[in-house]
Amino acid sequence: MTLPPDGVDSQLTPEHEAGALFAEAERRSESALAYLRLAGFIVLLLLLRVFDVLGPDHAVWLPLVLYGLATMVSLALAVARLHWRWLPALFTTLDVGLVLHFMSMLVLHAGLSATDALAVPGTLMIFLVLSQAAVRYRPALIVYAAGLFVLGWAGVHAVEMAINGGQAPHWRPPELAHIALVILTAIALLIASIRARRLLLTSVVESRLRADLSRFVPSTLVTALSSQHQDPRLPHSQPVGVLFVDIRGFTSRAEDMPPAELLAFLSDYRQRMSAPVFAQRGMIDKFIGDAVMAVFGLPEASPDDAARALRCGLEMLEALERWNGERGGALEPVRVSIGIHFGDAIVGAIGWGERLEYTVIGDTVNLAQRIERLSAELDVPLLVSEETLRTAEGSAEAWTEVAHTTVRGRHRPVRLYAPTQLR
Image (cartoon, rainbow, N blue to C red; front, side):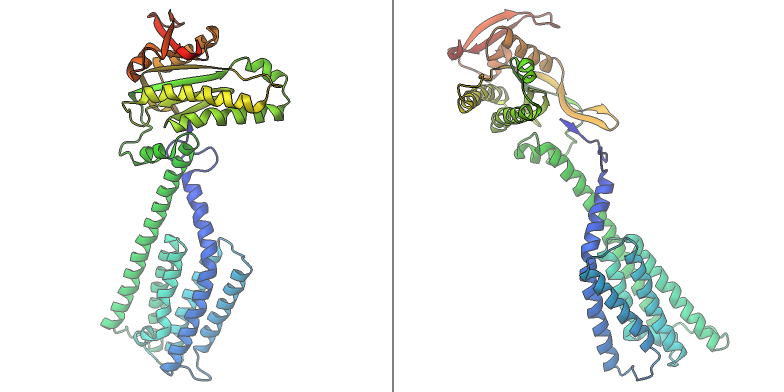
């Protein structure tokens, strides 16, 4: 089964996939943020009215009007479902700039000190700006907003110094506490945003692995693979049952089939052969044309792995018989060869670079494939090794020895058995 290595995919890396998810979340959040801006603008107007800061010709009307216009623009974009990657940075710059402009107007035209201007309700909008940056999942935007505000605050003090003839400002504890609170809030939001991004990236990697596994592995095995403390893809040795099934005469059958019909035939065949594998908690290792390789005993070995492999082979034959019945007597019946062997194999992610395959390799796999080919040669639909029967504790009456032979590539002979009812 082909799996991506950590952080690699043939189309999208997890980082890029997470970035796409963040972008989509950001796009959807802009609508909520637009209404949040509107609510903030209304609250600000009410607060300024309560504190009787606003007069008909008050200087802070300009930043308020500009903020209101920006709010209307954001609402219009949200309704039209328009969003660009640079919009959050633009709105953040505009919002911080308007808060600073509001402060400077209070210093220049209302005669307030920078310390007093910092305590005016309108300046508290900086916390809303920082929160909006956090909702957009952009850590850099939080740092940018906080840094821009602190620099602007220092600039307001510079304006105050110029008004006072260069006299150094008098730092008051409430002002310093206010700035410290802005910085600490930005740090907290920054940590939360970074953690959210990391959690999403981890979730993307895990969901990618689960999605890849779930195409071939029952859901119970997907959960087991994902919950293991040790990476299940690291190569290791363990006993497994390996099953190969192949269609007899497929090459000649495929030669006479139109492509669309051939694809439909293979799809139907694979579905019917996969169902018994999943029913017996096995894993589809790979499809090779009309051949299917299934493994039993992953991710951890169980005492009944060999028995489940045997039951799977028998259920495959039953599924094939039902399929031939559904196809009708006018069509040539489908015949298969099944070979099963149980033994130790190397399990894990095998390969290099961007091509890793979660699979099993070794003598057990090779022998299972050889047994499948002998099944066709001996004209027996299901052939299993003596090791498989012994491990599965199969009934002697249910299985009949049909061969004691040496297979290609091995020196020691193997005893092969077939179901008695099929002999």
